[in-house]
Image 1 (cartoon, rainbow, N blue to C red):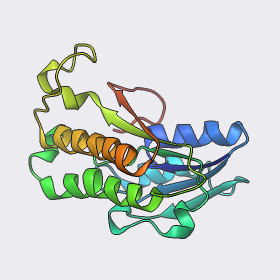
Image 2: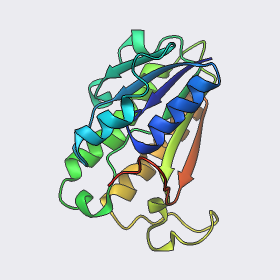
Image 3: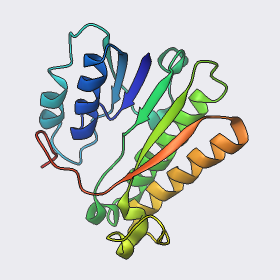
Image 4: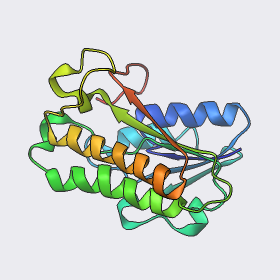
Amino acid sequence: MRCIVTGCAGFIGSHLCERLLADGHAVTGLDCFTDYYPRTVKERNLAPLLGKPHFTFRELDLSHGVPAEVAGGAEWVFHLAAMAGLTRSWLDFDSYNRHNLTATHRLLEALKGSPTLKRVIYASTSSVYGKYASGDESLPTRPSSPYGITKLAAEQLCRIYSDEFGVPSVVLRYFSVYGPRQRP
């Protein structure tokens, strides 16, 4: 399979790339190294992947668009790239909108009409539930931060692109994730 992993230098993305490569898949990793935490941490996450057969890395800001040669031929797209952090989202809404919503839109546009695409897996967050985040998925989505708002809006873009343009997508909401290489 040909896979794309956005946010490949992050905690979850770097682990996912390792697993996909170990399972024999070709992986194109994309990351723009947002400044939420130091670039050196992300470069350390990425280092074991560089030079591996079947792994290609592209430093790319999705909000500027996704070149056809990057998106073309992809079968599975794991969209993990995002600007994280509840508190900072109150101070820098434009960056959150750009990296969470605009980037998702540009990626979906690049994938629209792809004859090879099997699925887009969008990594969302429990922050879409706001103060109800400790409950189950039947609770209402009521974000209580700009971060949660941008992630919920991106979920809706995935739904719309699926309904209107046939971009096969699924949204996964995660709560807290811990382990080696977690962000500081």
